Length: 119
Length: 107
Image (cartoon, rainbow over all chains, first blue to last red; front, side, top):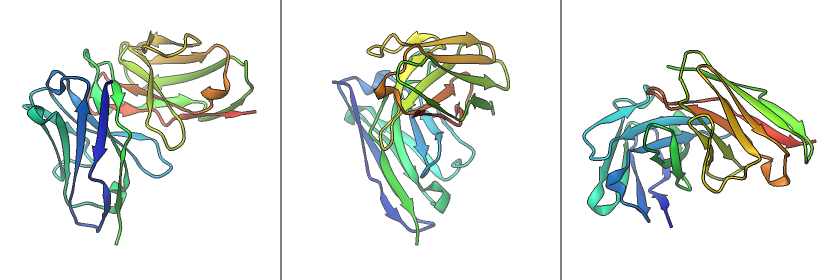
């Protein structure tokens, strides 16, 4: 079964750091571009970042550029999101998602990991 | 950034109704338009990709159409399990963007 499982969320103070992990199973991670998408409380979906299949190319939303870093370890079948200088507005459920080939959106979503930034 | 505007933002419908949700982009995105369904507290689920291609396992009552700037999601006969929020999303250019969502509620 194709599956993505996020972990690493939690409560962090403003200015703090957190690293999310996304463990992939049922498919070969190195064959796919991967994405992070977040959803604030009661809000809509917002794309955060993407990484290509070998990790050589990354992109970020302006709201997280310079603070968040996406990376991957294909040998461990795991995607990461390092989040630094966290702000209250980063509070959200973070989903990892598998990119569909041909830039046709994503075809598999994780269950989400909750990040709360609060003092 | 490409803006996607969904309409309506919410609607009330009955089981068996035909439901149409539209998504308009503020610039041409060809058919790089995807649709997702999200139920409360759950991860989104893929319904359609490339404007009109049905994701494997999704019931055929869901269909999509459009190209360029105007797109439509249609549910031909609304079922109880279809009450949810629906999002369109463009994958034509980075940053990917989503519509604001359409909440489909029970009348």
